[in-house]
Image 1 (cartoon, helix red, strand yellow):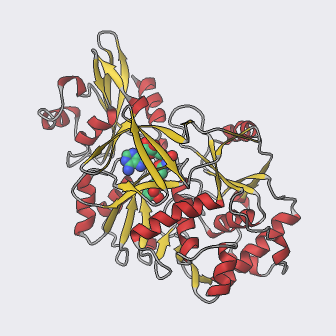
Image 2 (cartoon, helix red, strand yellow):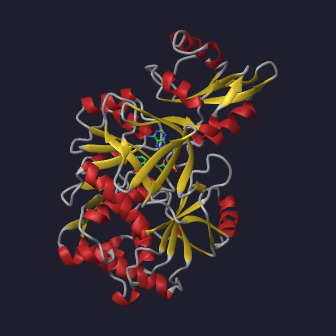
Image 3 (cartoon, helix red, strand yellow):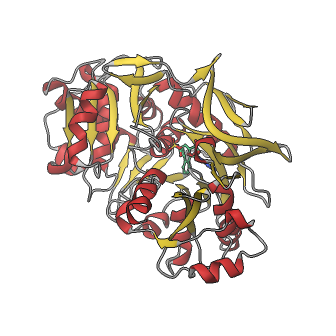
Length: 458
Ligand code: 4YB
């Protein structure tokens, strides 16, 4: 990986101006063209009053789905040395003002009503370098909301150096070079989407944008993609082919071995990763094998287990959380981030045992929902399942299953199948189908939302 001492798009414009940087459905942009677009955009934002050091929230177009205009705005804000917070466009409109007030952010760039195509941007006034701040990798550059599985989301603050450090370990492990193309297959408002952007920028590769195309079609011209397990399931279930696609980095949730085997059978090389928002995505990763672990720490990352909790140290770590316009400390002890993820070393690699906060008790027996979910997911008609505790006068709490997909088994079928696999106290007492509206455009369904939904029904 080349040392980056300037805005990466300026660096690649100097090094390989005519190499393709962005692949849209019917158009390709070279590094020279992309850098010019970013210069124009930052000039436009500067004219609108965006200043260095200012935190700016950015919302993309729901239909545009991670489009070029959003990427351009993200990069242009960085170039102005603003601190950019990309937001989920499906965030309930009512919660947005309260969120921005809590964070202390007063500027919001909303692209929902202003979709700018590259050809339109190219016609705008020519203004360039004075709208590039000095490349200073140690300053706060991005804010990324944590998934907020419990409580309100927090905004993790990352420097440019942290994003580059994150990219470094992954590109090294996966041998990702300038000859490859990574699909922006996950949203920019999530750390996994930004991870893709920084790997692309670090090696001067190609970035494919779906640009309105279905996932399978966009994958056809990509060599790499990052997917959460449910995305890969859907891809494999659909009859669409993703020829051309070589390597998929999986993460964000427990990765079922059956999924990996199925993908590998059709020629997709799978990689298993584990990471968090606070660590700017991937911390440990490995080439998928028959073991259920997530590999070992990548370059610049360290993992330790204290009282069954995974703790992390990394050069990609967030500086802290942004609150009321100020930096607040991470939940750490002696420089180690306390993840609240349970884990252990097994067969020389890290195994994830689920969120410590998800553990509940039924008749005095501890139930770790992820452990039961992992077993139930082996049922041929279950792709994704949540085990949710509901109150019970006799047992304290009891497990209920919520299954994603219409074609799933009935509770009786599932329990017959799981008879010897689950202990009595682990067996769900009811089964529901996950409603579509709980998916909300994020990369994961929030366990808290599923819990509220179940409790309202139960
Ligand atoms: C896991 C988990 C795992 C996370 N098993 N629980 O670039 C990547 O690394 C990537 C590629 C594909 C898909 C996602 C990614 C990510 O970045 C994921 C990062 C992420 O999920 N961040 S998060 O803040 O939203 O959630 C973090 C939590 O997710 C962790 O604390 C774990 O609880 C869980 N998780 N990877 C089991 N392999």
